[in-house]
Image (cartoon, each protein chain N blue to C red):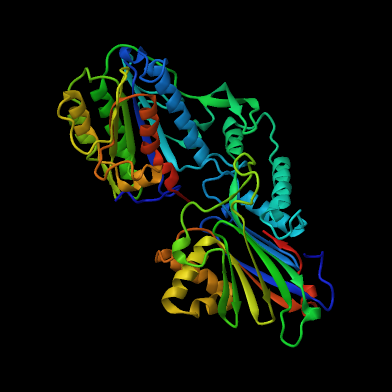
Length: 274
Length: 279
């Protein structure tokens, strides 16, 4: 669906990331990446080995993998991404004999992460009047979420739309094929279109669950906050919410994406990854 | 109570008390292996599982989420068994013992879904050797546990309380263990009293009595171990995945346990490994 690099005169994604690790920044298990057409957020499973590395690898690989499997609209569409990610993981984690036994053991148990990604297609040239700039497909495994806001209100809550749907055992993208050969049983897909007044919010589970709880209790103010909060405001609020136990103690990542015309965005939308 | 997340700031603690007396040389129910061998194998497996839970990246040692100790009691006396431990320092952080196990080759046969068979060779560390020798000084072992953990609870007031897992196949030969057990379980952190769970291993075929709510008054030895055992906190039962199979108020106690019961007992007793929250 996407192409490499922005083309002048067309619509692209303009993204920014707000991250508040639960502990040391170097141990953050969340990862995000974006380019002009795709964005992804991943949350490494806390109990897994090197899950922050796996999350980062998944997010980065999502930007560059062709999403055109045998059935482009089917659940197997991301299996090539999974396969390539696993290949890179195997290369990067190839160990020598000097590694302690327990590192080899931890590697053998594998790693895992949740994932939400969005792949967009520029439709600005076909828009009439106030039509959409971009169409998108969003993919999710587990409880990392994409919330699509239009004029400050949610139009898509994906893949989870209620706070009570979060639990402690979300579906995961594992490194080991023996655990899950194909993503088909766990992959969720949705589609949508966004215009100049829309924002796509990709986020990890603690923030998503809190947002859905806050929206149920006090309406749209939470969406205004997520759409407009500055980095400092966001950081302070997340720490307050954790301290008051209104938000669970977890890494928090938010990636805000807007569809914009490239004349304005081209110079400001380099590929990003963490 | 019993809700504190495990973290480097508030680590947890496991202390295993292993009966290594002569009778542990008899086969364990449900397996041809001697009780001492089955117990050593499962403790090694568990020690390794704890290491793996704490291993988070290539460039760092296993994180200090737990302090761990293993105390054996037998005709050799009562002594800490983990490499690098001593009577004065019977507990060590996970990273201190992680690299000290003797590497042992294990092979297993895997049957694939397509019917093919694959042999897998893995290396696992072994810290504890089987032993079966002499008497059963359980009271002394509980006394050493008290001394070891008295300091630990003072230094870790905010931590989930230590879990002591006592595995035996007989009666104490050095007195009535209920007194030392009571003294031990009066120790506490701000999150609750020390938890003492007891498992009685058997060589007899028969249904084990697992996690009873009421005292088994018909067997005096079972009643005694029941009295010594702490109630299982709901948080542990849930964390272990045994919710629904264990009644509320059940004691951390198994009588006439075989290999399977031992595995369940250890799994439940160490399920705070899934309460690791970070930091």
